[in-house]
Length: 256
Image (cartoon, rainbow, N blue to C red):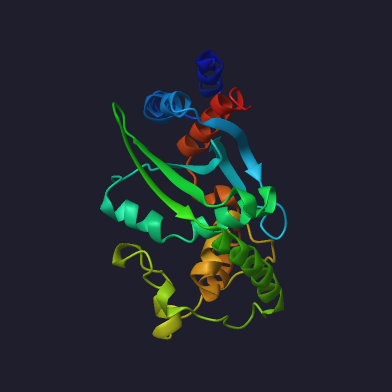
């Protein structure tokens, strides 16, 4: 089993405001009830926590579970504002993150583990309650093999492009998540608005950067120029970071 005392000690020692610590603790308690205990009751074996793939897909997977030859990738998502509604579900289903998970899984374990279920577990903690929702879908073996090849091609393509000039544009990427999440650079690409001016940094494709590059190479270039960074933690709040650390601590106690 697992000891939650050490997990709550971790939360108490986090360098975040006290009210945020309370929100994280609420989210952890909800996650234990909604997912950790069902995982154990249903017989899922914890194979790995924070497992990284290998080149060309070195991206990290939050949690890998297995039961009777069936494999599942779990990704935790925390949301500070709004609801885990149909728009949230649509965004998660349309996101290219499944392709990234598949590439990492294939590079780490080979294609024999496929088909793999990908389960996005979302939490939206407020001051006195936590909303939860999940989205799941399968990735097949042929998709995994394809994305590993795609990542090799992506890195080759990225390194061959001149960052001082526009990169290939994907019109489908402008509103791939729906009009609520339209790309902020539509005006630059299609209306002649002035592009951002910044310093180019040629990093390897992190998890979040790979999602943006798959969405549209030109969007990725403009993001780097406008923000100057592309770390995986950029879109994760302090609450989300501590929550991820807490769930990692729980499942590390359960690794087979």
